[in-house]
Amino acid sequence: MKIGILGAGGIGSNVAVNLVRSGVSNLKIVDFDRIDLSNLNRQFYFYDQIGRSKVEALKENLERIAPNLNLEIIDIKIEKNNIKKYFDDCDILVEAFDKKEYKKLLIEEFSSSNKLIVSASGIADHDIENISIKKFREKIYIVGDFKKGIERYKTYSPKVMVVASMMSNIIMEKGGYYEKI
Image (tube, rainbow, N blue to C red; front, side, top):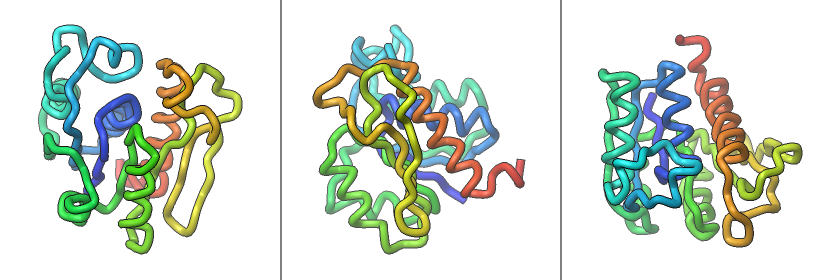
């Protein structure tokens, strides 16, 4: 089973580390961005990696945890014309986009597939008491507070980590990983 992670920022990098630390080893991570100083408060990167490709640095960091990963990284921006090409071979998709239009694109392109889709909505600010999981259709789960987006609020590690952990747990449970490990 292969897990595709669409974005390597706060959600994507932390879901990836949670999965690898849980024994998951078959991942594909796609992102085009570079590490910035402002990312270090909530993303799985280090000061000496500033300026580097997120997917390349994340691969390095994850392989320090588990050197024998089957980890494919692609340094490219995901768009409507390439999303299916890069993720058709994945059984589970982790939506880790910053922008709503890309979240919508993922759901539109894959909602009729048999893939498990785990997404986030409302990960900004610091309050964690309103985080919940909503299930849509048979295999689409969205985690967050569904109100506080990054376009209006700052992001902080505790809330991002809680959402990423809840997303990871859904993947582990619904993907049958707990039974395999």
